[in-house]
Image (cartoon, rainbow, N blue to C red; front, side):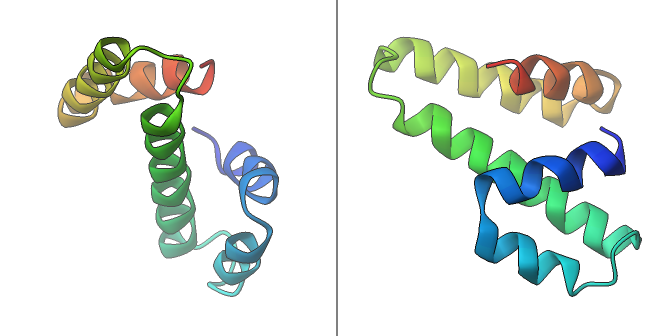
Length: 85
């Protein structure tokens, strides 16, 4: 995911944390990694908390994302699919 997209999405999901991440010198590898990790955690939490999704469906989505993220060759595709949820 490109850095611009990460920092565009960040304020939409957390105003407070977005401000904290910007204090990490925007554009640095640390700021990018922390921002991406935060967005990923928010995504996983949103899926987990979605009462409209049956528990088995939530578990299947989370398992699929976990497998994809564990395989570096598929991480980019997994994040692209997850961002469309």
